[in-house]
Length: 498
Image (cartoon, rainbow, N blue to C red; front, side, top):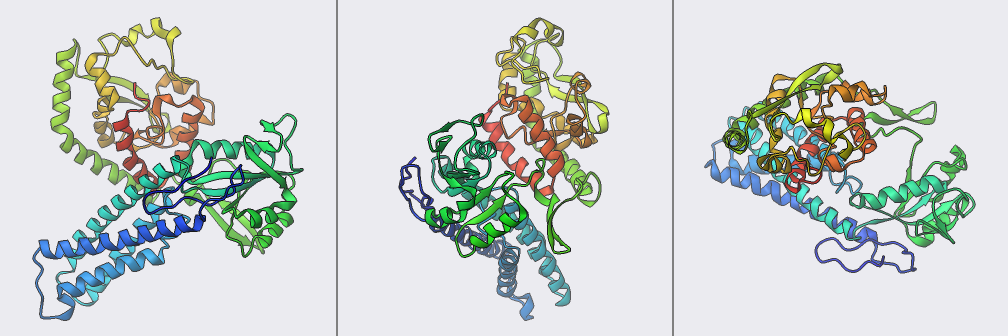
């Protein structure tokens, strides 16, 4: 896969490719992308404070700290300073994961607090405008700008550009899994260009190995030679995957040998899929320990989530009220039956509730399900048909754009559901759950979730369960924000909606 040039601000990644070609240095596109984000944040912040000052007709005051120019400059300086202190421009967090938006939100909150305290100290009368109007406006603009830049970066990565060349070092089986994941999710920005295994070759009963290649990636040597290959090949990431060879002493020696290079060492711990704010590195008696905190199901953040759910549902119901009335009329005109479809679902802690949807099937559709059992295309315990004969003409459109789920906002408003969470299961599905899958019931089911933005009904059952459990384990307010943001795109594309 030879990489060509790239039109726009992000040149292609550097790395030794399978045919020996070397493309442009990875640091070039990384630093240029960082400068692009920094410039965009600065311009967005300056534009917002200038627009607010002009729109609200702010005039100069007698006191220096009441003057528009001082407050505008102070607000922009505080926001940019908070972004710098929170390392919101660190290359490691730009373009992937919820951490980028988490740091952005933390920075804006810090700037708000400092601005409020400064206003109290100076007894400023105009400070409310900058706290309650300017900062929220800056948040909206900068998050939108960052998201658009991220979409562009992800598009480039799907074309094989702007990728970090990775050398994977571990057992053939674990390296094979890493290669598969990086190819499946190119937007994460990794491309495995070389492999080192215990003895420089694959296992007889392991993943596909063709000569000196593993899944089409060159096997360049053994695990003892990793540092030398990194320095010669110019790899940006050294991904250490599980293998009995990796003792603490050998990992530490590898870290020492990589000092002075441009490579980042990443070690995959032998753990379940736990990530995000639950992982902490502590030094205990001089020993670095990876501490996994308990998932939070109560507390202040959960209280904030409850408030956001109820308030967000109320606002969305008001905004979508005309659309919901129109959809209701179309449902009544299309086929006989009521407007809404009510169904029992299982919520938090196994408590059942009645979910609301716009009716998308003909009357008596549930009774005809047994006749279609042999045509089931759903994964695992799910019953799905891509061309279900019970679905009405209007129902097809409603399902395509998830409009049939709008009445679930009433479930969110009454507290039986959340805006974001696992998929609400049927009672018969829960009866077949094993103890591991029942962890999905530790939180409220959601109107949307990781399953919604990852393919919905097209997902294999195991993948859908994995995503739900990942949400339960790694939940955060930042993750909820990212999921809500991505839901709009998923709904417009309609992937897996039938």
